[in-house]
Length: 458
Image 1 (tube, rainbow, N blue to C red):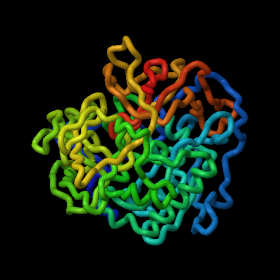
Image 2 (cartoon, rainbow, N blue to C red):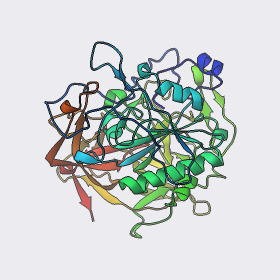
Image 3 (cartoon, rainbow, N blue to C red):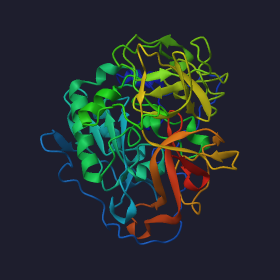
Image 4 (tube, rainbow, N blue to C red):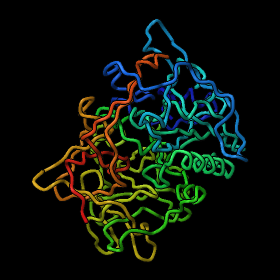
């Protein structure tokens, strides 16, 4: 959940244990984007895209039949004389005007259900999601119409094209992920996917931890919920899209698929700089190493180097160190194999995971393979698919020639301009007719590369 930073003591007082990335005293906290993800806040130009002219009213929840839902509208109010100072979401008319819904983003709240609803109803919180699910009984509260853009993912491009679902719970405590919660989440997700045509795969049904930063400065501060203990295999099965072997039979792509119940690696957590090992319990990821050996260091991520997560540029076992973990359902191109180890192209480097034939942690995967176009030494990686007239800012990573990544296809370049309170006549969707991007599984998070920079491997 894209909350403002809270102290551990405050969360304990509220009956919760924080799972936000705490920073060591010696390390500066990474920059976190606003929940809206807006790093461009001025309209590009006046536009009229047919947006509705009045704030929304939720009179009945948008939910599938048989699911217990209620309406608890999030705040939509101007907070000062500045029309750009408002909360907690933006008006839109999705999927009209080319602003399609392409993702469902899964979060956990880190605070109670009631506190989450209360926060989203405070316009000074500057945060919201479309839905909140209660842990105990799976009750669904809808807070933002799905036609509108909620502020939940910290990336405006993703927010513009996503429905956000908060689940009451803590990323370090899987007891909150109850049968009732999984059931409600799966039913709601399938309803939304069927309604909006969201693909039932792990590049479109994603965790907040898979959402990239808008630009390089925000990558390290992006959130990591629902965390290592959310059962993605179970969720995808309940949605009706179980994670199964696929592909063309060439072995060029693998999908991460450890046995959830028996996959229990060491996981630590370091709130306030004091580290402790978490209880041994089922996890949804595999560690990635620099060489085909358990004794080799865990891989690092350049965005995390120098932070409390990877102060020395080496991956760690911290639960919130997303730079050295590949999660169930994510697919990657195979870079090498040695004995019981498989290497994948991951974040601009070769990363090794333990994958013995007797207890495999991957299955055959599918997708489109892309690589830098011939003659290019390296290509940039982006956190959003914006027209170049809006922004060309990158994530700070590069993909060297010869590396290969998995995509589900191309998306058009688009930007939704909506920067002032209740002024729909100025809102517009800006598109480029000539620019397209491939969305890829880049590292732990998704990313985009320009179609003009890559070629498809047959």
